[in-house]
Amino acid sequence: MVGAMDLDVAQVRAFVRTAEELHFGRAAGQLAISQQALSKRIARLESLLGTELFQRGGNGVRLTEAGQRFLLPARQAVAAADAAVAAVVVTDDPLRVDVWGHLYAPMRTLAQVAGRAGKLTLGHGRDLPSVTTALLRGDIDAAFGRVHPPLPVGLAHRLVRLEPVDAVLSEDHPLAAEPALRPDQLRGSMLWAPGPLNRLDFLHRFADRFAIQNTATSVNLGLAHFLAEVTEEPRRFSLVPADVPLPEVPGLRSVPLVDPTPLYAWSLLWRTGNGHPGLNSLTAACAGEAGRRRWLEYDPAHDWLPEPPTSDPGSGSE
Picture (cartoon, one colour):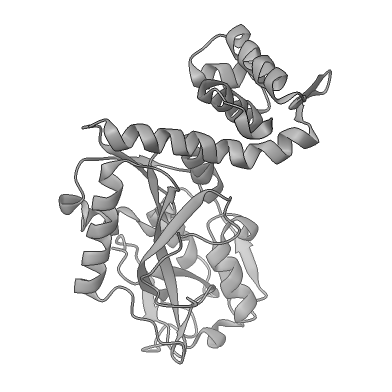
């Protein structure tokens, strides 16, 4: 009877990690066990379930159809087991938090809540996909940056801050002397991006929304280098959140955008079922600071968001 089947969490965890890596050696290394022990756990799980979960062959490892169906509930089972342990085991381990979107300085916001959020250790994720992978594996407890769909099932997020965005451009740009600019006034200019636009969701959506057809890609070597490149050509511009402290770059102008004002959305992201006590402290600290500093003000008549909130922007998604 399927309903009476008891699953071994260690075996299920071995399956999940192998399904994520699609490589037995790497999965075994992640779990700090031998490859032989990993293979035995998965073989026992397959025997219990009465079906193969992986296809093994010369072309590597692939999930079978049964394995694909099993992956999501298996992740949920591992997360529930971890949450059950966390509920009864007192831990003084710090909350492991990664940030991404480094050019826009996410640490500015976390620094304003860290004192009320308990013990944190901060790391640096490369981008949203790498951070979501780390969360699903349990390598980190939470992450902070700009969230956009689609997100893998098993993750939750809460909007923390909506930050106005300014245009940065050369003082030789034809519009540099304007006290403020509408985004559509930049249609004749070149959007300078610190990487491929298909990997920079906010800039990509801005270009689509405001018909910016002339775009060019640079390499992200840090904010000072990137802004210096913006000033090298009078038609270039880029976007930077208004509160980002700009380095001293000769010939650089920062101009507010209005009618509408683009808003960059910062969110806290975590794996559902994570029972680390520091997660509640961090979300509460973020919500408190957002209320004090009015971080979540949004007026659809005057502001632009790539994904407008469907309800109270502070309510998040869980």
